[in-house]
Length: 117
Image: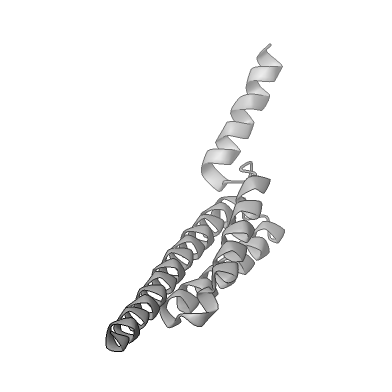
């Protein structure tokens, strides 16, 4: 019992002091990739504001993966969270741009139809 407690205490101390026992959940790696892919599929590359955040998300995800490889899991987790947040923002901005474009198209159609009356 004492030996087990000592091992747990040592692991906790290492985790707190160095962040060495903080594994990056695979879900963070996967969710950042999925968020980036969703933004790309919605057309974030076609809107300048969305494209900027999409590129930031890609860069942050790549940096997060590099940090994992370097054993800096705590920093990697934060970087992957940032990547997901920027990808989600890119998705939202792309969605807004798509809605604005659709609204403009509909307005043009309405104006065209009114002109025919």
